[in-house]
Image (cartoon, rainbow, N blue to C red; front, top):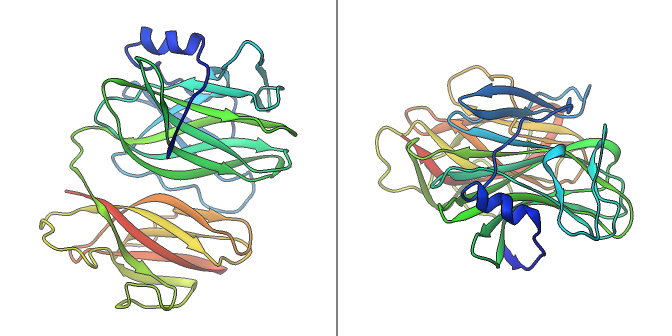
Length: 321
């Protein structure tokens, strides 16, 4: 997280005129992200690339999904331009920036940021979620997703955020182009827990790590391969209430096989057919916000499919009652 100074033109007026943020709009023309309308908010479920064979990323119970399409992004300076085509919005200027304001109810917990992006540049890029003081700078980056070089095919990338929103702030999502190559954004979404859902944040506690020599040591060690492993999500907690229904985690995979996925779900049920993280490269390191229900003993299951293996670790950052 850091603070930056950047020029604001009409977007500042849009933010102020909307009482701090502009409305979210549904994704249009983006087959990688399914759309539905619910309760006045656009909801979405980002999917992997077509024909990848992997299940869609899980949607967290109680999480509302606010989406912006490529058409909502604006150029941040008169010296930059914006072009929108069937393959997404982009600016042709080196180091140009596109951004889109998004309405987030105050006192919500922003849990994750997801973007559908193509990246033909020679280096990785980032899509940011930014907190804007309406009275003026600084503007604070509160979360981002890295977009590795991936050619012309869309990539759906997700990262955890973990930020409570404020009534005196506006919020936007922005993409900066590199000095060479082209990055196009097809759409983005924020996953938020609205106020009053029964979420209790906690200081992050590492409840599991499969790697030998890394605490906690009272757990099964070794890579998970083509199977399941029961995880105690209450490991290391003291004084939890008796009615915990589920936990919010930062889940990370490391030392991955060439491709695969990992899924977290409630112990004692059949795998629901979703994944918490998908990966596509050997030796990849990927982190994601992941929710899972737990049984009466605080246990969940981690599953990795056939022909896949990975080390992984889990930090619990909150629970639901």
